Image 1: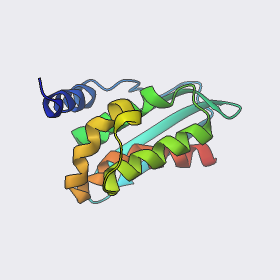
Image 2 (image 1 turned 90 degrees about the vertical axis):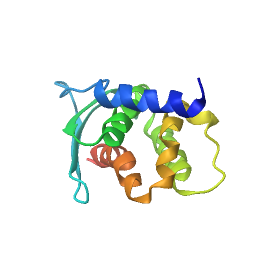
Image 3 (image 1 turned 60 degrees about the vertical axis):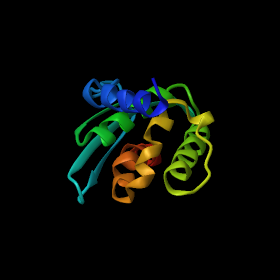
Length: 138
């Protein structure tokens, strides 16, 4: 199986069976994000323990890219500090918007690298990340 097919399967899997898709009852922070260009809507719930993300989940509706990105994000950020999350988001944004970016350290997020070919879809892939940043600013 080639890498493109593997990535496509990962996006479909997370898009149709998202992980951490529920309102987090014990959240300490939350925010809602909306992409008016395509109608994607996401609500991110975060439970912070000091500067660490103890738990995170999301709800909403959107395209497969938006949902898969939110699902992968929630898996990746649990247990990380806010500084680590900001750095991961920066790497992800660079992957989607800049040339010659390494996919190696981004794990499953690398599956979304193909979005770079469709600039209007970058907002779909980053919506949950921007919303997570907003939630953690409260």
